[in-house]
Length: 202
Image 1 (cartoon, one colour):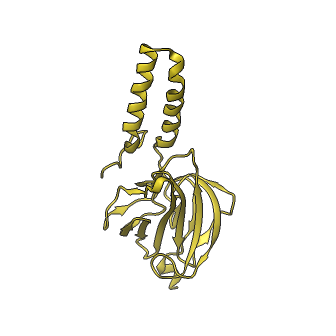
Image 2 (tube, one colour):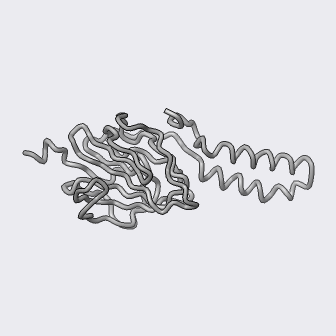
Image 3 (cartoon, rainbow, N blue to C red):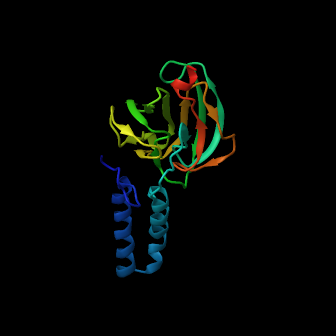
C-alpha cells in the first residue's frame, strides 16, 4: 500500500521539494532574495511534476480509462503483444508538465508486474496490459500494487518517474473511443470499451 494514499504530492517528490524549499528560505534570509529566484523556479517546476491531485473515477461498465495524462499518438493493432497474443493498442505521450501518477485503466486483478508495466485481468476475463516506455534518465516506473491484488477503475497503481509514453494493450475486439491527437486525463477519460469474454462468447 506504499504510496497509495498521497494527498497532493507524490511521495518520491517530497525529499526534492523539501531540499529546494530549504535552499530558497536560506537564500532569502541569509543573502539577497534575488539569488532565490532560480531555486524558487525549480521548486515550482518540481511541484508541477510531482503534484498528485485526488481524482475519483466514475464507474463505467467495461470501460477502459486513460492511465496517464497526455496525448494519444497511436491507435492500432499489434500481432504479438506483451502476453503473446494479438492486441489492440492505444499509445499515449505522457504530458511533460502533467502528473506522473499512473492509474488503472479498468478494474481487475494484477496477473504480473514487470519493469515495463503491468498486466490486469478483468472479472470478465479480459486481459489489459500497460506498457511504459521511453524512460527519461533511465528511471523505470515504480508500482504501488502487488501481483494478485485487485484494483478498481482509476486507482493509483504506479509512479511513472518521468516516463515518456504509455501503451495500453487491449483485446482485439475492444472498441476505441479516442483518436490520434486527442488529449486525455488519467482516471477521467474513457479511451475504450471491452466486450467482456461472456459477451464475446455469445
